[in-house]
Length: 125
Image (cartoon, rainbow, N blue to C red; front, side, top):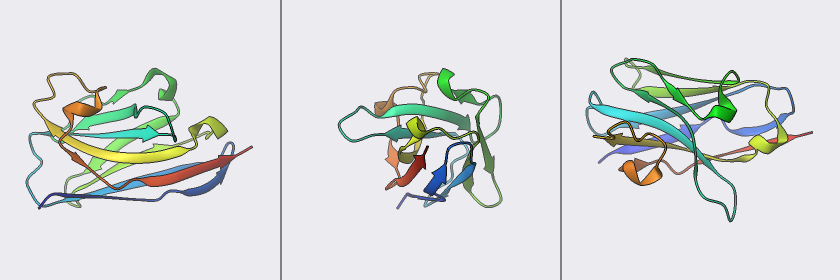
């Protein structure tokens, strides 16, 4: 059974940094894309960043470029989202997702098969 378990969320002040982790288990992810999305109540799930498990250039939403980085540790089966220079508008629930045969369509939630339960990030001004 595939599981994606996020951690690392919490309270932060504007300008702070947080690192989210997504521990993946239950299968081999070598052909998968791992991604982070975020969602506020009443809004659509928004793409944040994605990375292929085998490496290669990561993908970011334009608004996150330069502030967020995504990486993965194969030995730990974990994907990370490093968030720097946090802003109040970064307040959301952050979700980890995994999908295969994305075809370059990293931005669309329905392309991803597996999802974590989410971790809340709250940034105060």
